[in-house]
Amino acid sequence: MDTQHLERLKNDKSYIDLGFDVDATLQIAAGDAQAISGSVELCGQGLMDAINASKPVEERFGLIQLNGMRFLQENRSYDEHRHASTTELDPRTKDRVDGLAKLLQQPKERVFCIPRCLGWKYIPPSRRIAFAFEIPADVSTEPVSLRRLLDGTEKPELGDKFQLAFGLARCIAQLQMVKWVSLNVVD
Image (cartoon, rainbow, N blue to C red; front, side, top):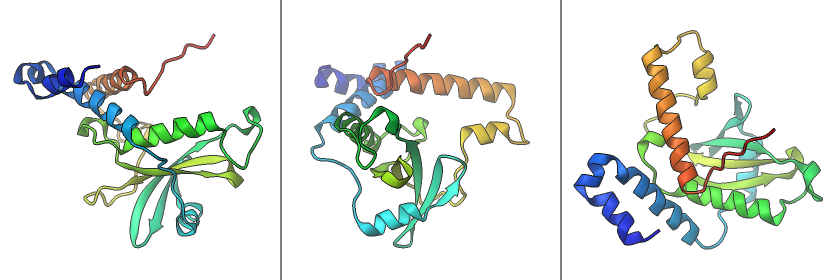
C-alpha cells in the first residue's frame, strides 16, 4: 500500500475521527518490520542460562531475571515430528519466527496490550521457541493470562465481556489485515 496514503490516514483529523489511524499505523509498522535487516534471534550464554532458569508462570509463560531486570518469556512448542532436525529450526520456520519478533518490536497502539519483543531463541532440549518481552516499568505484579483472568473467582460483568470480545475481534482483524494472522478453517 502507498505510504503517502497511509500517512494521510494516520494524521488527517477526518480519518482519525473515523478510526482509520490505528489501521494505518499498524500497516506502517508492518512495513517497518519487513525493512529490518538481520535476525533478532537472541544470543549469549548468560541469556540462555536466564531462559533455562526462568520462573514458570502458567503453562506457556515465564519470568526471566537478567542483569537485575525482569522480562516476560512466552514459550511456543516446535513440532519436531514435521521436521528432520530437532537441534535447529528449519529455514521457513526460522524466517517466520524472526518476522513475527520483528513485528512485535514495532510500536503498537496501547489497545493491543502487547509489550515490546526483544527477540527470540530456540531451545533444542525442550523443543520450544522462547520470545522475550520487556515488562513495562510500572508493572509490578506477575503476568496473568486472559484464560486465567476469565476463569478466576471474580467474573467480569456482561458489558465488560462484550467490550473484551469486541476488542479481541478488532485486534485479530487488524493483525489479519497486515497478513500477520491467517484464519484457516480445518474440516
